Amino acid sequence: MQGAVRLIYPGQCVSCDERVEGRHGICGPCWRDTPFIEGAVCGQCGTPLMGGRPDEVSDCDDCLKTPRPWDGGRAAMLYRGNGRKLVLSFKHGNREDMAEPLAAWMVQRGRDMIMAGAIVVPVPLHWTRLVRRRYNQAALLSRCIAKQAGLTHAPDALRRIKRTASLDRMSPEARERMLENAFTIHPRWQAALKGAQVLLIDDVMTSGATLTEATQVLRRGGVASVHMLTLARAAKDA
Image (cartoon, rainbow, N blue to C red; front, side, top):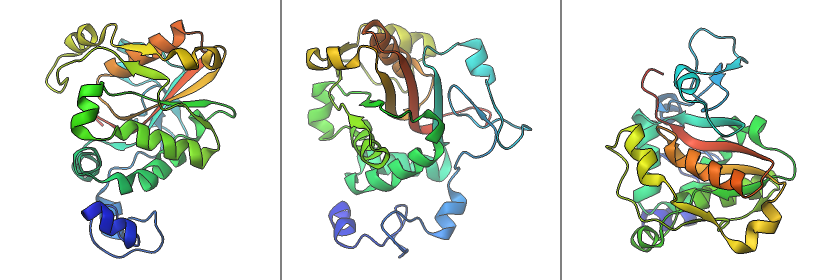
């Protein structure tokens, strides 16, 4: 119901009920409370880096320890405080109306990851989880990102063929084992993906295990490059 009200009366903050100008707004107090990622960042996962130049891009300790299979990555905000609240509201609160403004923040932060002619691919849900949740939050974001950036959207390019338990409390090693052989490329996208540049979309990056497995499947499918873009980054020390 809350999402339907916001679609009818869109001039409200995506985080609270304050009125704001335009459909993509967030009120001043919520903006200040949201941990948007700015300044120096890790070029692989988007984590903010302390002490760097405002435009500096290098690798964080996690990405130096665990090299990523993708070509570069960014995140719009940190998964904490109001950032976590926004993600959970979008993911579990029947708030499909949030997809467009959240995607706009991702496009702004991830402009270096958005390549002309790229194919936008979301991380998929297993069909059993999709039935329960009713929508895939990554696919809602990827659809809006593709529209805003003028790119091709491939919402079903990846299929999740392995049902996995919740990864929330698992170690990075357990996540990797759980996700092994979890994804495959949909046959109807195989030809289009060969030699293509892919922008891979998910809502949150934690250890990176899900994005790693998805990227490796795309690599085996013959894509030329993979850049990833997430709404939030769960980072211990940021």
